[in-house]
Image 1 (cartoon, rainbow, N blue to C red):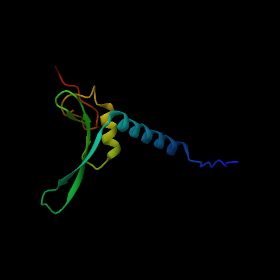
Image 2: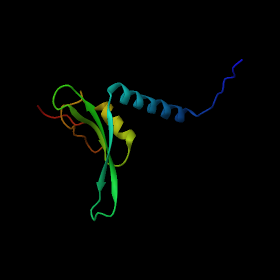
Image 3: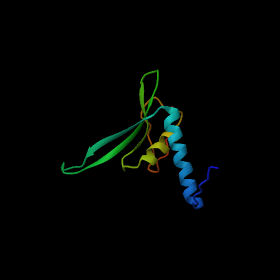
Image 4: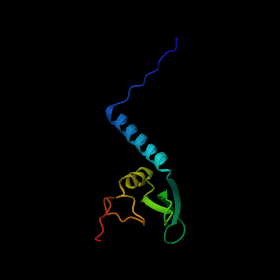
Length: 105
């Protein structure tokens, strides 16, 4: 008989794991690329990493940045891509809280 193994985690950790699963599912189902871009700091002696989530489309532009984060936070970049309004055909603009800004048309 096969033994089952259980690990107890608290509710907040379980919720965090579920959110991470949803992020991975979004990357997989959207066939999105994750790009890490080296961003040198002024003075050239240090750098940080910018992250872009890129979607691929048949129509031009074929590659579209759906989410991005300049603070080396992959989860924030994926969350932004998941909430990008209708995956616009150009780089979306976001407010200081990471929410997509609506453009006047």
